[in-house]
Amino acid sequence: MGDIQDRSAGPGAARRARSVAAAAWSCAVTADGAREEYVGAHRVTADGGVLLHVPEDSALAAAALCAPRGEPTAVVEFADAAPVPVRRRIRSRLRLAGWFTPVGDSLLLRPTRAVLWQPSGSVSVDPDEFAAARPDPLAGAEARLLTHRADAHPDAVERLTRLVRPESLHAATRVVPLAVDRHGLTLRVERARTQADVRLPFHTPADDVAQLAERMHALLARASAAVRPRALQRQRADGDR
Image (cartoon, rainbow, N blue to C red; front, top):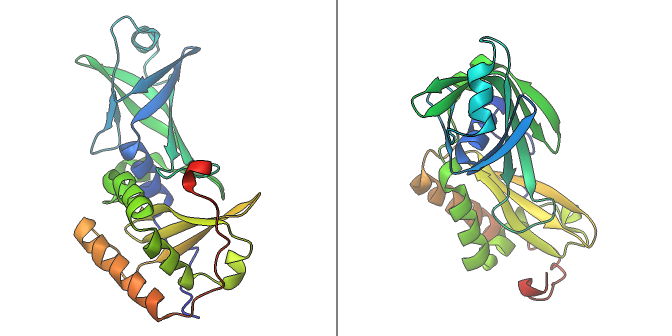
């Protein structure tokens, strides 16, 4: 049938956590009972710290200055949302706990705990492994890549369904690209009331966008040679969703 699904292939928890933090555009911070939302205000340092630019008059800045050194004083939370509109759009969440240290006009969080939540469950990530891990090389480009694939190449997405076991497509109304990393592409199979995710691994990992293009061409070539599954039930135009 040409079926190459592999649910186990993919980045490890530490790399996935680093990828979530690196690609997120916003975060929520809780410290000393105060919770604040920040957009476009953080970056992740090479050693896994979170550098956050905050206003001088923020409650977070005051809490960081008054907190005892060495005590976990803050929790930073990131949500990883699928760039393509789907049900249950949050693919994972990352929670980092630690303490803030003032660095110039910013605050630097050194994580002492890291917890990654995914649909399969939560996993604790060792802080040293989080610090040593590197984000997936496609994390920064993933949103652009997936939206382009979904909007400009729906025929290619449909062709890729030939690599999905027929039973996984039973009663499907729509299949869209949900995620991509250096190890493979994940498709979201939506039904009337439920959904499921199917992973199509690459034959070898991709280290950049150029290599990703080659890996996608290889998947599509294999899909073209596979037996076409029963046609999907068609939804009306996406605008009706």
